[in-house]
Length: 150
Image 1 (cartoon, rainbow, N blue to C red):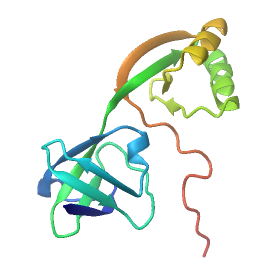
Image 2: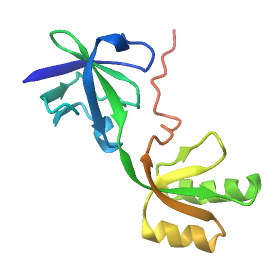
Image 3: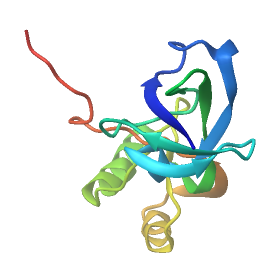
Image 4: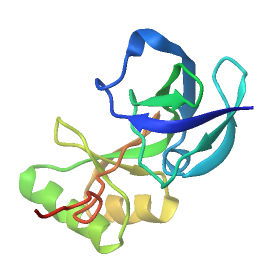
């Protein structure tokens, strides 16, 4: 079984050398070691020295040669809209207070994993909700990045 041993962020790997792709859920994009199958059906082993978060468009390098493109799988999510920025901030506060992974979309909406209890809470708070299937890439949080000081 071929092994994937290195990660390169989107735009920092030779996409023209992609031998295929692998579509992964948010949880499976945060592993160090996992057996999986490419979208083309080849069994592979992700075998990194440490866990690295993967995002849509990132590249995974094979141990021998070649690359796979990472694709974010569509998941069952809720998109959250507020009446205005203040309302949306309050909704975001309630999600953060419950430590829920939350994606902040460029157009001012929030995206969370579907949960019927949280859906009910958000409706009581006046949110407009859409339950859809879409890729999920929540914010990493204040401590997600490695900070190095010289």
